[in-house]
Image (tube, rainbow, N blue to C red):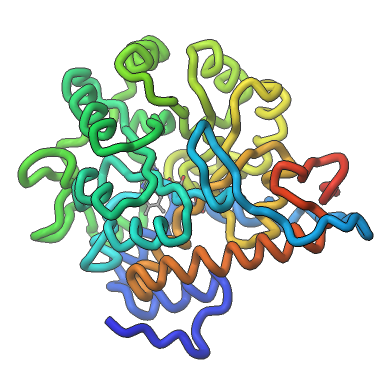
Length: 352
Ligand code: FNR
């Protein structure tokens, strides 16, 4: 597909509009929606607007370096691709198109367990991958997924903890969208795998996490933590990183914005493990705000899907290059030389 981007989207929000124009409205709703009244979806973006950046001047910081290393994985910027399911609903090429764009941008893609192309095929693009897992009660099956992810070269495991059940999605109910269309399936879940074979279980506990810990030497991140006590427990149970996230507002509606929980969790964790933040990141200035409040890096979910739906690999690449240019500009204007220099009390000081 040839992509005409002139005048084209100039920011991540424009990509949502462009994607909405192209996508089947049922799939657009699947990607865009959140749980119930979608209050948390709105809160995530609104939280960034409530913070201001206070630049420092005449620091002679030069052009910033954007590269970071997260849990041993180097990345060209502190922005990861959050795990999102079913990329072939956005574009026929699906996850490999996303992965090629991530590889070209030098960023980490968190490959979703519920991908529509196998993790091996995604890894074959050469992208730097982490693997996201919904903990399955069948530990033998979970173990086989972990071994496949390891063999494919994934460099960390992201265990999603916020999904003891599916959130209640009313747009999906209205659209009667409960099954993947013919020809698209959960490729990692076995031959002709199907979303219904995924078990989201309220029985999963910290003890399960201990078992996972014993199964792999990969770094483990726990995704979906909002309560500081859970952050503390996660560290006590040996996790290597935490993703502060409310699943983009798709699970429990009326949770606070993930950004609003970040400082509380940063205070509790006290630098023992790196924190990632996702939910509502749409601007380079949003990335700086998350860094200032304690994140080592952020992840973006929907904007990647909007890029993919708009122009496949090229569209995702454009989303990533726009965010990179915005981040470069924001750090420069803040007087920061590196992402690691941004803190809440000095560079880019945050005013609530
Ligand atoms: C998700 N998310 C998600 N998370 C996860 O751990 N496993 C998954 O399979 C999915 N699938 C998924 C599908 C879609 C369509 C969306 C929008 C989100 C959540 C995702 O990783 C991330 O937490 C949010 O998307 C971040 O919020 P933003 O950037 O979309 O606002």
